[in-house]
Length: 165
Image 1: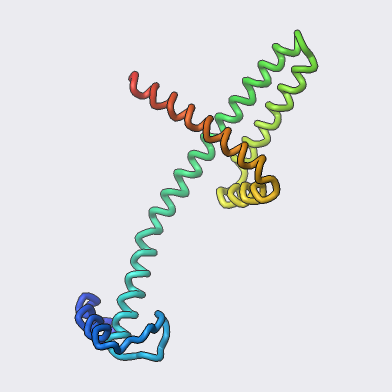
Image 2: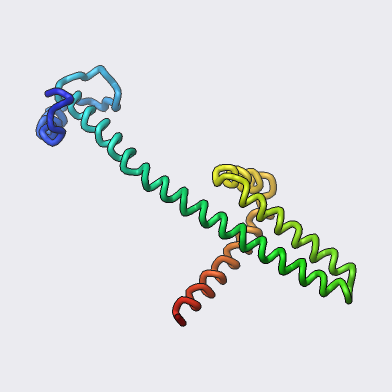
């Protein structure tokens, strides 16, 4: 049997070799048992892996595109929220100048996060999050918890808005 043969034709041969005990724990790529059936099985396995990788490529591209859209949308919302905080800080500044500085500082930090989201790749963001988790695990855990609550609240409010339409 050759690599050009129909992979489905290899199944009875593979079963025969396995049932006869001619394959004794050989790992894929091990050339110590190079019977035609084993070679056919390797060819079928390689073909299946290649086809799976080929089929997964468009899905990976689509997922990356959706992640980029979500990242941009999140960055835009953070930026909008930071602008609203700056406006609020101006109003607070008339009454309490010191409090206004804190609100401006928080808004500036949100602007920084928004810029980071906008300008970094998804891989860079994941690496940065992993580094933060290793450096300050409790802070990272608390931040994740807060982000989870905020996301749940956002999703609940978004779903409510869709149902009323």
